[in-house]
Length: 310
Ligand code: ING
Image 1: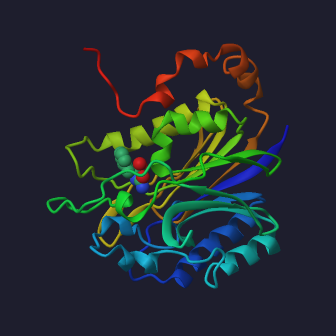
Image 2: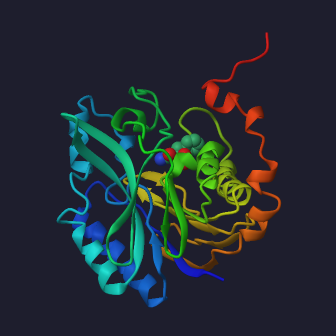
C-alpha cells in the first residue's frame, strides 16, 4: 500500500472586492487544517486567487491583467510556498498565468503542483477552454475563457510525486475523455483538478440537477476508465451574485465517490488514497497493452469536428 492522505480544499467564492492577501489567508487556513489532519497534499481549485473574471467582458484584454500572476510564486503567494515547506504539505493551485515569451504576452489558465518542500514540480496549462471569445450581450453573464486565455501548450503531463504518478487537468478538461486517457497512457495514479462551474447554463435551458450529475459523471468516468484517483476542488458558492456549484470530491480508481463536500463554502474534505488501489484494474480490465486497439481510434486525432455519413 502506498497511502497518501489528500485533501480537496473547496473555496467558497472570491469577490471582486477581495484582495489576493485576503484570499491567501483563506488558503493558508485550509493548508494549516490539512497539515493538522496529517495530509501530504492539498488540492485548491481553478483560478483560486481571484474571482472568476471570465464572467466579465473587457474590450481591451489588458484590462484583465490585474487578475493574472506575473510570477509564481509572487510576493502575495510566497506565504503559501513558505507554509508548505514549514508544514511539509504539498499543494495544487490554479491561477491565471501571464508570461512574456517570444517577445509577446501570453495568458493561460494554469495549475501547478508544489512539493512538500515548497518547490514547483509540475505545470499545466488548460487545454479545453469552454465558452466564447466575443461578448454575448443577452447572456446573464459571460464565459470568456476563449477570449482571455490561450489554449494550453504543455499537453497533459504527469510527474512522479507524492509516492506515485500525479497528473493535473482543469475544470472543463474533466468533460473530455481524451484528457484523461493521455494521462492514463502515462500510468497516472492521481489526478488533481480544480473547477469553477457556474450553476446556470447561459446557452440553453438545462434542468438544475444536470450540472452536478455531469460533474460527478465526468470525474467518476475519468477515474474508473483510467484506474486513477481523482481529487477535485471547487471554487463554489456566490461571487458577487453569480453562483458556482460546489461538489468538491475525491473519487477512487474504482469510480466511487469516497468523499464529497457538504457545503458551498470553504471546506476541507480528506481521504487516505492508496495509490495501489487501481493496480488490479490496470492489470486486468484496463490493461492498455493487452486490450487497446489504436488502429481503430485514428479518428480521435485525425479530425476535430464530427463528420456524419453522407
Ligand atoms: N467551467 C465550466 C466547466 O466545464 C462548463 C464550463 C459548464 C462547460 C457546464 C460545459 C458545461 O465546468 C469551466 N471553468 O470550465
